[in-house]
Image (cartoon, rainbow, N blue to C red; front, side, top):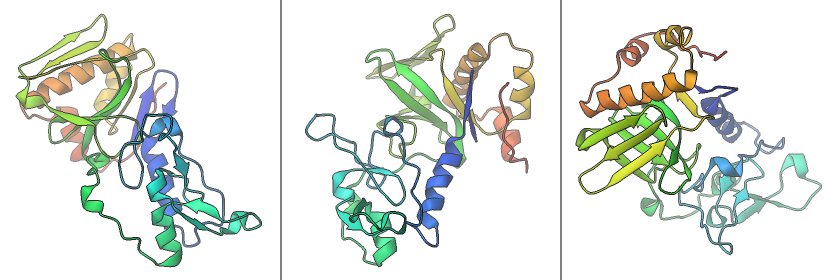
Length: 255
């Protein structure tokens, strides 16, 4: 699954798999991990709780073993790791601590926000600007026909979701690439900016369409709108159905 941008490509699923691979290494801690970028997460990658926005409580920590970005509560332990054994013990996340020591830390995980990001059942995933706040959010349109709204690209737990079949109205302004989603009690307004990033399963149909369009950005904005409209009637797009029935698991590149 590939994020497609007008200027470059970022393989998000590959990044997730890289992190998971580091967690599953037979000898973790033998080499320095690649740190997850702070801007790519708004929640702890262990407990899914949102990082505080106040200055005093905003401290994030990177596990020196796997590189994930975690909160203070999920990184209270320290270990001696092979790649930096000449230094003092370093901070690690609870997951890596348990893997090293076999000691399971007792936590009430039942109150943690549940992960709702399902990469394998995602039709479209991309970044939008919230018109009301100006902040960037990441939206996944999944097979449950809901828009799952996340605070950052690698978040697993959503901030909220929009059930498309329950919308009173869905409007799209092509010139501004702005979407107006009207629920019974609340309205949402999102816009696609010029540096829009989008990911979807490889599709020969979409690849062929892209060869003839004047503007990829306009094409992707229309793709979002058409797919949302289909989701309102709980219908999957034909190109996505063909992908699900196909054994092709390749990646499609832009440009």
